[in-house]
Image (cartoon, helix red, strand yellow):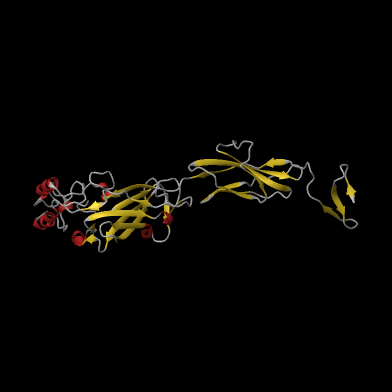
Length: 319
């Protein structure tokens, strides 16, 4: 048995000519590998590093600027070479260092690693009829998300459109694309029993039936590039649904309703709409006063058939 001057045991003679190496001496400075890596995950920022054989524990330091991790750790007593930081603010960059502590209390810090926490995706815009104010024919709804998103399964499963008055769901055909800013855009078109079959003749996309509608986007079926589910309610937390605001007469909602003859989108067919019908009557698609949304059967002319569709809706409203 061999002892040094402070009477601590470091080498043990096992058999003649053989030595067993004991744990690191107090006072030996531990070395943390430069392989500290920070990775964003749906639950926060995951840190991993190479283990130091002589370390008894690790501490994690965090800052929001390079070299700004400070002297107070956010976590201590970590015994494995990994840690997930879940106490974070969205749209913020975080910078980390890890300290190894050995049996003698000596410490050494790692390299710095950083990661950015992006916010969960949101619904940036919902547009009815490509922004056209009229609600005489409603053939599409366009949803633009705040960034790139992916869908769980069929994109159509993430969207629900309900006819409020009768409680029936509208069958949807969803087309997904990316705009010039990299945001995901979903265009919803309609088919089935909750569409006006006259509006679909001559190869046109069918319009919704008359009535008010509610659009729901299911938060747990839409996720952003950082893996976080949709913040549909706009609360700052992932996983909530988007639900379109309720419309009221003269309100500022989406005007998510349809009433044939409603040329200005106020949900009522009144004298203002009669004026539009008169101005376009007997006009065809090559003439300047032709209004396609009052051409009920899409035959290229506003005629008596279209007046026949307009007349029973006069003085009607969707509220």
